[in-house]
Length: 189
Image (cartoon, rainbow, N blue to C red; front, side):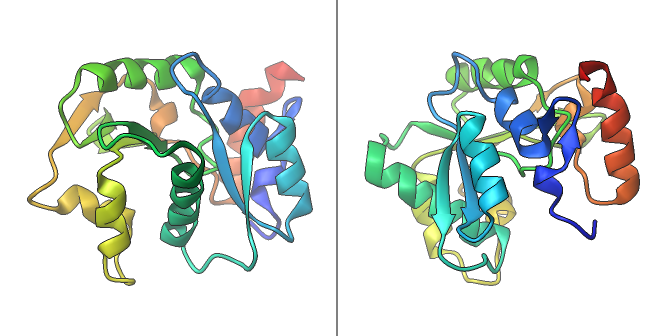
């Protein structure tokens, strides 16, 4: 993108504020954003949106490192039960909304899966829900493997949950993606 995409404006908010707001439902007890400590604009925007911000002392080498830092922070503050759940979505999933997050959380409460993945138009999207007991499995993965490798394990029960909202597939990786997102949120201005 050539610039920090999570602080780009979308309507009356930044990208990260838009994504954080999608998770601010009765179904979610805490929203955590992991950011580099030197990215003051992102940390401020996430905190002002109501997220708890985990500041990394140095740039994250990959998404898995960031996810692990957020999970370690949650563990130290809440000591979740093994059957508790956590949702994961990249900070640029601007198409997510509270209705989709609530629907996925509702399905999660009645599912016996280890992982619940929204499925839209035959494609897996976000947010993905994980049982807390998988945190230890994540810690034990080889450093070359990412969070998605948990979904490929023979010992992990994965459920795909059909969702009609294409927002589960959204992200902003290119200037064209950002232009589409700006048009989508122009009504909020």
